[in-house]
Length: 494
Image (cartoon, rainbow, N blue to C red; front, top):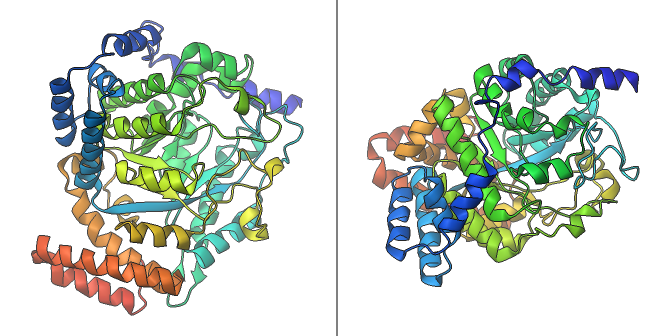
């Protein structure tokens, strides 16, 4: 225990935290945000329509503009907002959805967050840290049998799952290569959801090849943050967590992801907090978050807080939060996870979602031991949707979406400020359409069931027709890549 305490004592680097503060304060002003929401409680219809047009131009909204959208009650205006959210998503990201899988590598944590199944004092939780061989076995299933190309690696804050462990895990994951029906399966992008790290650790992960670095503030409301993160724990330091994206970008990490756990405090305030966070990153670094996540609080084993919180957000308000986030930060990727049930995901994806997970298992070692049921003691929370990747892709195809497994942009330098400029201009969608078709072809041939493959063929035919019509100058080159993929070559991209 003394070794853990020694490790905790040196984790927070005060100089790396305090240098970002302005006059000793962080950039989240609770009173200002609440006042902004109050003074925009009855938005003018024409003002709302003008704001929608600004979003369609892919411009970040101001706090007042976002507050107006959050307070819209007129059904007709809400309908117009939803239509605009879809249009923004289509303009920036085209007709595609990116899929990934979560890989839980550790359930040990030194923190004691009231809402978390992995909190330190939860004696019901099964604890463990995957070995490198166990991580490899998980990835052999994910890449070789299911067909995932992207993972989000997740671990608690603990000396046994520190930055060196994460770095070794990333190298291990990237090394897995599995034979498939016609080619091979491999994880090509590993995003990381972990604790706030100091700059030197982030530089190490950048050099290894980290994807997007995710750290969620959980709640932006200072008083609530203090209540749910007990004093004396690492996570109780609000500004250390808040400025971790600053440190990441300073360390050279190209893409960062922010998020809030809806259900800890008022959902409108959390949307405003996410906007303020995006604005701050734009102000300091010239780029905003690569992704925004907005998980809802879910039941967790021996964690009564999850059922007693008074700020649970209903489906209608959650839907509105998704729409407003898409409009207020129009360039960002938006992640909806399998915390939500299949109905909610089906309804919300058309409102601006760009990424979602599938075949998700969040028990430690759960992919390779293939236990069909969820087990609360080994999970951080209970999932709402456990459908297979094949089932999810089939549904997306029926909805008219192409599932993209493309990771080309990260290897071609379309990251950081470059990707932000391309997203705002709508040009990134052109690259993504080409690579989405090629990688979807790859997945259909290597992994799809016959029924999903039939649905996928219809989507591919439509997408190829669009490429021929909209990008005739590169159509022949594109089709050569496409035919080479059919012939068994893998990981081709523009």
